Length: 293
Image 1 (tube, rainbow, N blue to C red):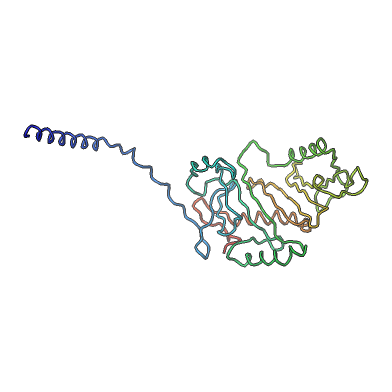
Image 2: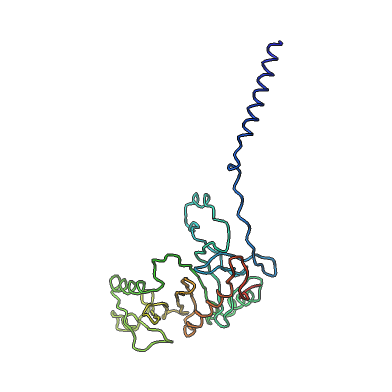
């Protein structure tokens, strides 16, 4: 019995020494990495935090309640990505240097304001939906999507896009886009077969493949604005794209064609909105935010 007891004591002592040695060999480098510092967030009157990041060349702080949906950051899995990929993906810590790929918001054409939840514009937007759209009246809100451009090899113009669109129309649909003699609101206009359906000799009754196309070039001859507009619908809409070299962004706007005369004002106002959201790398606002609740 005494011999067995001694063996048990010996084993316990031996295990205790092994544990002590293991403790001495603990490597500090194996400790969990320190978490990135939490950035400063600007907040609205309800305490909601802004969405932060870097859009193109500038750090921004987008007021809470403005974004339609959510902001997508560079590297985020797409909406239709494999669920397993989404589950494994870990976005880098938020900061004012984290590149934003895209986001959207609603812009009011009539006064340059933006839709923000829990602000008067939310009620205005609902009212306009109820009182204008059902009666076919022009809806004064434009859907805006902004895309950061980070590939230095891709030019900030629509030169290839426009040329390729014309090529596809000719090769696939046998439609020639012909430049019109008179500009429209400062835009160069191209119409499908001069607006005439060659099969009937009459104006097009469908614009599915024959939307009016309009462009604006800069002084160097590069196409910076590209607009496609419907013309046969009960309510005609325009899809409007433009580049901004200063921000390194591409912007898409969709709106009722009745507001096409204000295309330049829209471009300028959208850049003013983005400028109002600029911040320092520490998150300090550089101006008064448009759309803040």
